[in-house]
Length: 330
Image (cartoon, rainbow, N blue to C red; front, top):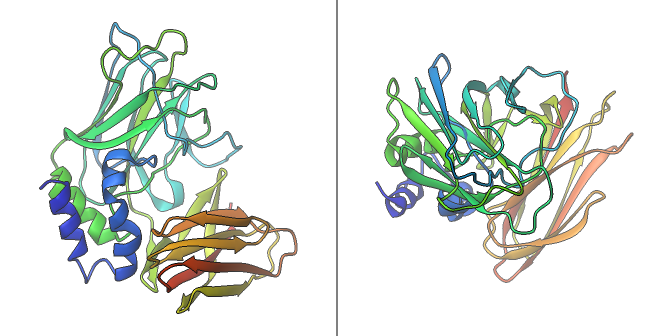
């Protein structure tokens, strides 16, 4: 199966991926597979993992997309390898294996034997100083090109990223059909710089990790989201949510927030959109995005009683806007 076959497969999975998912995710499949900045890690609970880190004679720049997390104090279980940290059980998911190179290494390889195709992965490339010409690093899984990205400066714990689609069954099928994952057989994730990429003056550090997507996923109005999520080193559990189908070019949504001792985490989301749009939400002003849907997280203000999201569409009308509120539980 090639990337075109994958897109067609996902597009026809009506019982697994809603029209919302198709709009929001399928348009990003190729980006997720070849050029997305978000990263995955794939695995299954109870797998056997073997990591091989290969440092070549020609030092190379190591990258981790700008999704590399910043440093946050966390009491969640983690594992540290060569200075890079990964969560071991974020929001119910399960770390199966990780591999981290030394600064200046050009290739890092992780091989694991998953027991499931419910997988995700994350890649890291950390540079010690800000660089205006960070090189591109690449990720392959079972020799299939998955990701091209550049380094970041995050040093905080990393957890699983995203897959081919937000639909758990659709993502599992993509791992099986596109990547060729067979439970019980080895899967190899490789993060590397091309030969000749310099890494002398700014030695960057590469790493990858594999996760089993064992956390509970919910679906409402065609949108998939986690029962729990991790934000800035803490675990949050879903407590309320709201959706609004926008039929014209403008729409707004208000979600009453429960009282809580800790700040609530609010997810502001747009889905099922077919044109460019501008949104406005609590304390974040407005932003314009392309017509593929989006979401962003923010902590609610102290004593905030409601969350708000409004949208103005440019061109073809219609969209789904939603708000998810999570309460800290650790």
